[in-house]
Length: 201
Image (cartoon, rainbow, N blue to C red; front, side, top):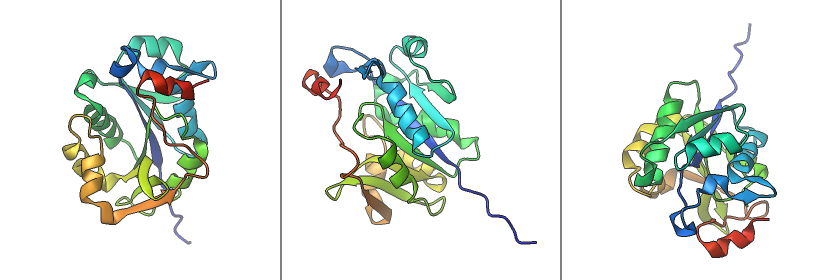
């Protein structure tokens, strides 16, 4: 009997812990977009883009985010060290996934609502093995989402300090990254300052 090949498990990893320091301390996860918190939109983008399970890392105002946002079906990790920067949230998220059967993590940031399910699905489709590195690209420039094969997690976590996230690791391993052009289906802006709030509706 022919051996059945297991379908790779690509988990969604949503980093949503930021306190919105440049937004006057408004947690980014709770910013409203089309009547619902940003964290809901991002979790839905991961799920609709074919990722599962979906893990969400919260930090700033975590109890309020849990109370306001519908994160049903998501695994939630709270990063008590969220003020240290995105690196600590990425480490916590990868640690939570380490005990699962996930072959890769597709990382999305909560403050990029212009990146939806189409871009997620496109980058997810770049998975080839547990050593895969892939990222959305915009005009050839690397952006999000980022796909990290499970064999890469320990190295990514070791390099994730401060607000770096996976940036330092990806810079060191840029030759191994598959860039997946997404500019035709997504916009890679961040919601960082009060001016950026104009992107929300």
